[in-house]
Image 1 (cartoon, rainbow, N blue to C red):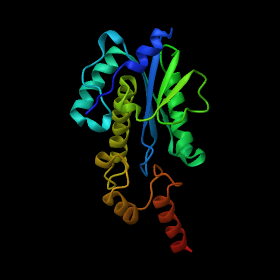
Image 2: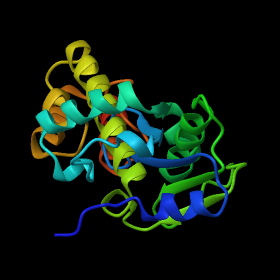
Image 3: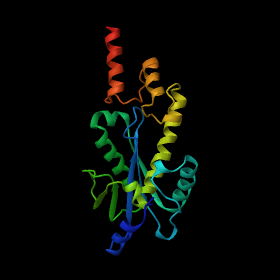
Image 4: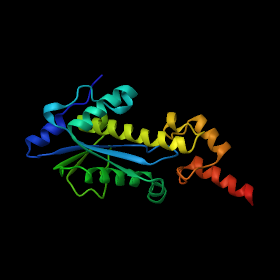
Length: 210
């Protein structure tokens, strides 16, 4: 199994870049909650061992790596709200969250490595889209870890405010239990109205009330 490496960052630094940021988002698929992005500029002299795509790490390992990243690198997180997701669409909202994360960095990157096949059209910095970047590029892997950790924490907090949907375990994704809770309890203000399962339930509620 191949692991992410520092080759893209190293090539940019050799070409004259001073700071290279990796960017990734988490939360495109859920029915509820924000979409969250993180941007990370690693310190090449002290990169934590074991960085990988957040989906390939245990929760305990993500927590440990996130603590090291937060203490030892320039990082920032950005969110796009449910209202922005419904207004813009999930792709544009994801890109908005990415741009907010990049803007929150202490240092302005010379190059931004973005997970996926498309750069945010609002990006005002040189960028490179990296397909499968969270499994190829250490900076993007680091961003994936922070984005997932911090979004999961948001969903745990929201679960306490809106019990019954299982967000503390499913992070808002469309699990069978979450779908059943939507049918039984209805939609909350944190559900994405533009997503079909939520939209369909709201339509049924409106029809039933007529």
